[in-house]
Length: 491
Image 1 (cartoon, helix red, strand yellow):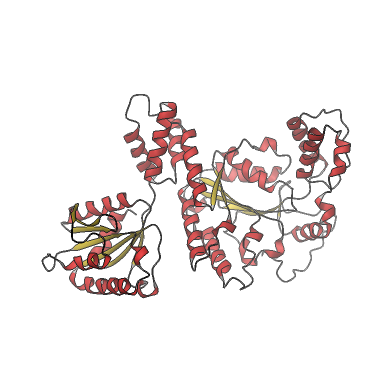
Image 2 (cartoon, rainbow, N blue to C red):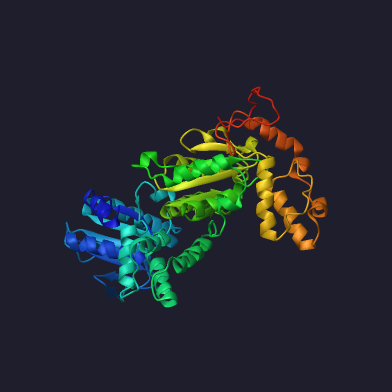
């Protein structure tokens, strides 16, 4: 919902304290100005650099004093007239008792006299004294239609604007950008290519995500052809993503992947995006942690909003059991628990077309509520590859590293795909036969034999198989269901 529509409702209902969360102040103020023109309301705008502006004109005697700006709500206006004061980046002043008291008094008085305080800020930082006095409005990033309008306003010459499928690719590449970022990306594309091209737009988007410090964009050449095995998982995810549901109720949610290290979880996530034509957004949960009170939770909400704005996409969260390691303890004053709660709610309730792929190596560190129904489409176990899968993996990496098919294979009975790749890479790097290069490989099934076996036992009958349709059954031959021990169940 746009600011103008929501703002009209709130002002008519006399919500005298409004906080607009936006990174695009000029656009937000423009929408507020249009709202005021339509309803014959008076708009005042203040920031510390330009001072107070009324009708676009500066008021010279109130340049940088925030208290004077607040008091301007009651200067030179007839009683009963609606007056709206927009305070840009005013969160920077809300550590002063005088400012807090003045804002609180203005909001309470404004409800009676139809005076409205609107704080415009990129983040919500309300002090406790003001929490109950303000309603928060989010200024959403541009929709596909709005991005198309920006593109048409930028590409004005003949031949600069693509059509059909190519235009859809351009708009998809710009999804999740702010208006300013989209304009810059379109302009760069015109300078570089003479027309709107997705590649230049992806470049700007990648840089924008890097600046957040919490999200990154993977754009590689990985595909299912470069990933041996996992036939059931490949078929399930590809069908779920390529099938267009008739409503949001049947939209795919994502998968949780469990396995010992090196079995292809991360590579699968990256290959999935190319297979279904979606960008792969990687969320670094560890980078969400901040040093200030409430900063971690705010970063989590902002990252999830950004992911929603990037839809349709694949969101990869690697080794999630390590990311939320503090959930079961209170060593961090409950920060991890609150972040995890926010993430769980988003997993269950988000309506955006985001396919979430989470990976984990240790089920004992995952809380039981994490994989309940409707958070994931399926929980898959990726076992150590069997002989057929290993042969396929050897073929892929022999070709990649230029190793002759005539070389004999080493003893790879307990090897993972990552260890096969490492052997081929070392053979090419050291100019050694595969059998000699294998002497430098110690498989994870040896170094972590107990944890691998424990994970396979746990997954037996509880997870879907990534290799064959149906429930995973351990190749150890044991079909007996084991009792669930504390802190190990995901059900």
